[in-house]
Length: 197
Image (cartoon, rainbow, N blue to C red; front, side, top):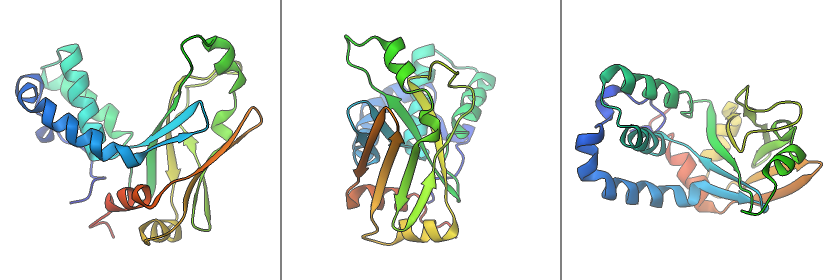
């Protein structure tokens, strides 16, 4: 089953049922996220999303907010489905992680323009990140960003090929780092596309 299919109302248990399965489901998704979380330098991490990671986020949001009404649940599903990878894109949540004693305003100000400086290298394919609009201004960025990496057919084929190098590159003037992920990351992301032509 493809892990890029949109989440439906039938997939979401809601707080009452979810409470009984929460510990097991959280453990499962936390283990799934390990190879999908990439720490790039000392400030930025990316978590590549799929149906499991986003379902967990919805269930946790409903639990935290006490949301039980169908209309509100459907609204949450709609919001999170916008972060679902598609047949021709990967998606990730990008976190700017600051030390507790950092001046958040100053640190986030230094990273203005980050949305023009993040890309993936999948084998020979360079893929520039497309950031969700509205999460940065001329003098500040949000510490949480939603990004999408559009994939050509050739880049998708490379992602699916065992052993293809997979790197995250950040070339911002104030933050230059790159990370080559291990094969477990590539394999986890490729597995999301099983059954997708």
